[in-house]
Length: 430
Image 1 (cartoon, helix red, strand yellow):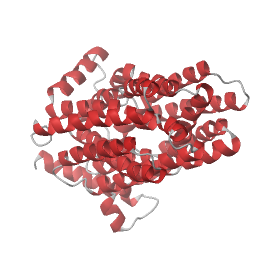
Image 2 (image 1 turned 135 degrees about the horizontal axis):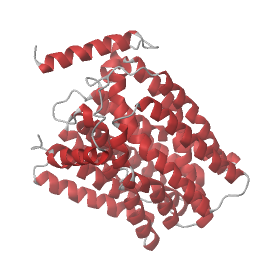
Image 3 (image 1 turned 90 degrees about the vertical axis):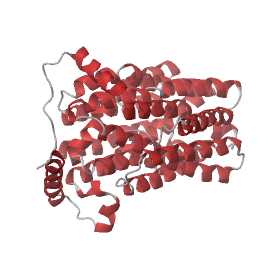
Image 4 (image 1 turned 120 degrees about the vertical axis):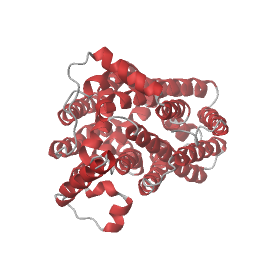
């Protein structure tokens, strides 16, 4: 029996065990589009994250709103987001070395508890009137440090929940759920902030972690590997770097992730300033705009998950790049509040298609023994580069406008994508 046949047999056994224990037996029409939802583990994870991620977006909207209210400065909004994301650039690559050697389930429970604590603390400080910009920056840095460990562990844990056969679907749903929560989270955030104050957005986020912690604790991993415990951490990190740089596919995908992080994703950070200065719509308008992007993300997640069986996934990477960059260019040129929602739907669709396909391809191209290390390097260039992008966008927005900053970034991504296309980067990867 060939290695491929053995792996297929193992995957079928995993699916049989986890599907039989699934809390909900979903119709075949649904599981054909979302095969990861066949698994008991992923049903639990998906349900827990559905609640927890709404809380995440309560905090994401709230932090930008709070900083803008404290400073009335797009620069400080961007800088706060940059400080929160900086730990991903500094710590994530090193975290991957140790995540490969740890029980990821126990690690994720601990990181979730720490993030819940920091969110509730921030909310209490705001509600009690003891908040100021330096405290916001300190808590943003702490939250980012915990997240720099949580995120690579979370992505590396996905394969342990569902195995490799349905990994692509699980990643698409995971990335899509994260961003699609914007469809509900920002709307709730706008209502909460307008009705009760921004502090309660942070407190509710902290409480929402209870669902995520419960789900992770209930998961029973079905796929695991024995880590190389005797390898020195620096040698282990070096091995991850060598593999990433020496594998053409992963190297290109990591570069694309960095470019999109620097020039595309900061549009979310600048949205409070756009809502206030361009559309004069306040907290509710901010929630509405981000919800439109979330609706597009949901559609992008559905489409990407349904197409996980496609052989030419590089085409989805290029299509996602084109859709997201062109949509945000149009957003930057638009002054109409309704049309802004329309183009943000397409922007959300394109960014999810790009991000989820890149992540899937990196995981599938990586050996089990170094999955966390390679993912950590990938996430360092993706999430870790977002502080750089937020800082650049904040500086440009301060000197010109937030829409100009968004338009400039999307133009850079579009030009880069076309250059790589002409170089054959999307058709010749192996």
